[in-house]
Length: 197
Image 1 (tube, rainbow, N blue to C red):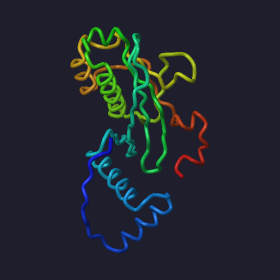
Image 2 (image 1 turned 45 degrees about the vertical axis):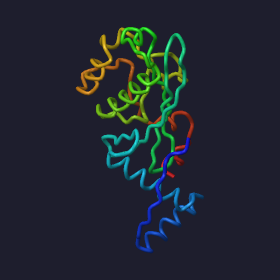
Image 3 (image 1 turned 90 degrees about the vertical axis):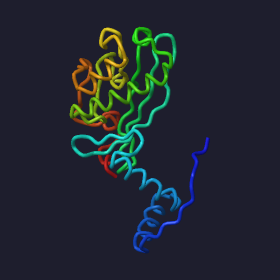
Image 4 (image 1 turned 135 degrees about the vertical axis):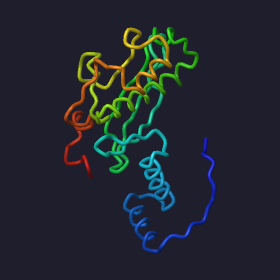
């Protein structure tokens, strides 16, 4: 479904228009698409954008998500951590809830709650000073599972509200999470020379 749009007319100095046009041409974007992206990045960095996080080191991340698994054992979302400044995906995580958690919390909308918990966790790690593109979980063995985190009933309080309260107060502990020295895309094979290009 297309987003609702509004046509507006703005007056900008010719020098800005030329710079924006050069940037748009360099990225093979229309002028309009480029201006919208610049505006989106500004809104994210000022705290008004969709699913954005500024790390303690000042890096801006955008979090995209999509459903990954919804079966009898778990409901999991895929979270893509992008760095808009460089237009690169830095990490890809699978974060979900086990069936016992969903049952104990009496969740009716598994997909929505799982997504909100995943976003809340990424924001929690960020507030704890961790760079969210460098997270590793050792919950499941093997390097292909280092970006997978499924919350189980033994790790969380009895209600979803209590869990969110613990996250907001930074009083919850994740015994499986660590932070690597490198972002996930470098660990998984992107050349370091391409990191900030």
